[in-house]
Length: 467
Image (cartoon, rainbow, N blue to C red; front, top):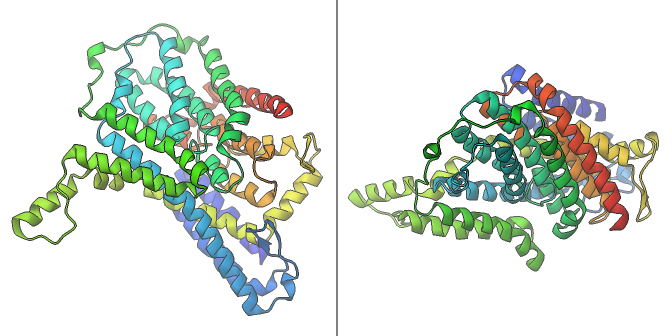
């Protein structure tokens, strides 16, 4: 039965990676894979000799001798545990995405656009690389990429020039997302899963991430594509559509930055702080938009007025623009990986990796860590979505909070995806917005991303010696 579950997972994963060829949204195979895997687990529970207790990070002793009812009860408890952990991530993402959409409702990101008053391609490259690095650490790499490419489309008119900027923006955004607990969904997973803390994540990964952005950007300044000036008129840069644009930008970004502080002070899960931040931002959004809002039942003209007010509410508008397919995809893929973890498949796979691959790491807290395994995971994230890779690593390793292994995994999974345009959410969205060719990216950008990844990895190994 375990073999059948693995086959279902592999087939589902192939369908996800080939979504453009199959013309099938990746959320569909992800949800099918999740449901079928757990159905097979429930139906074949008597055939399993191992069961992994995720709460205690170890195999359940004597699981094979449990009665059928006891095994089913264990399955239900485990399913509920994983659903709870997955829901924490999804609710957190929903809050962050809504805040970003509220900022965009007030055209807050146009404030950034107003600072571009020069034509040098090199200056523009550095500006967007630094913005991508900083913004992705605050509002996540996917959103930062969407925002910056939208701004690029207003500033750089020639698509041939723009796709070069977009390529370097992907590298910078993924690098910036790696050192922030809210910068990349995989780093968020490790943070919410109590594998990394905000302070140590910054300590271990800020310099490697910075080098991962700076080195490729510096090399790119010598390329022909970034010589000369761009063609644009200063009056082409649009002015903000709302008088509250800058205010909502700073309020929204500040509210998101407040979340790690809230978690540190209260020790509550991050999604609680994100919901508080969303409530504060939404309150000011409603005040600034002068929406008519009422929770009471109204009739006649009042009902029409209420409906119109609700329709134009920035909160309602922002919620309607959230990328729900991505949320459902994360639900499907995380819960499918949880099924493999629960059977102890990932736990045993981790042992096989540790024994089968030459160990070149250092001994940390009594555990021998293979840097090669983590680097391979980073390279693999360029081919396979990094969400299931990190989800798998959570089941493969049982190291404690802030063990350097988790920080290296955060860096590798976050930045390794830049090596292929389909390897990260930022790359996929840039590919869609600018119709960037897969093979053009391999030829022009992938080697820069690889250099950044290797330089950053080397920097991490050095920093680890002194922390």
